[in-house]
Length: 163
Image 1 (tube, rainbow, N blue to C red):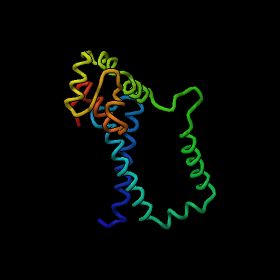
Image 2: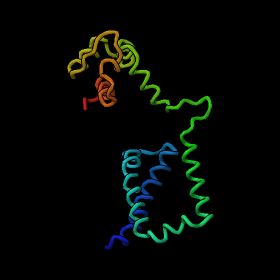
Image 3: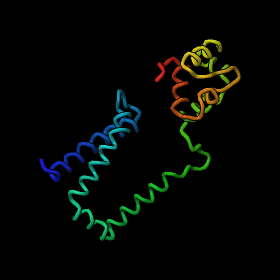
Image 4: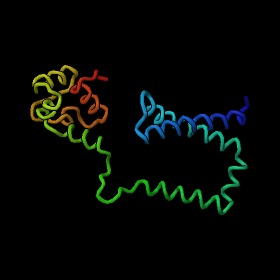
């Protein structure tokens, strides 16, 4: 199979995967690895579309000379730009991110209460994992500024294995 022959099937296959997993996520019926596949395999679609555009470069370039095509492209660029704007009264972050932020900033005593464990047990778990946790501190203070370390600390406290 030549480069040109492979570009279109790769684009079609990756589009199907991203479209189906995206629709499942939209309707909240995704399961298993749907979300993970959607997020990570979207890179395959980006690569496939790039290969497809390269394989059909002459036709691809022609779209940038037609007013109707430029209007459609421009409309999607405008929609993309608008997608970065938060509507008034709506937080910039999704609710799940706000919850995580609140838990990371809460004193460890409150976090322990959320887990149903004693504060001493949570402190012991964190210390056993090499995290210098102290009473009165938050998980963010204990884990440091690295986002990965903070998520690891959350996993330890809420029962997941350290990563």
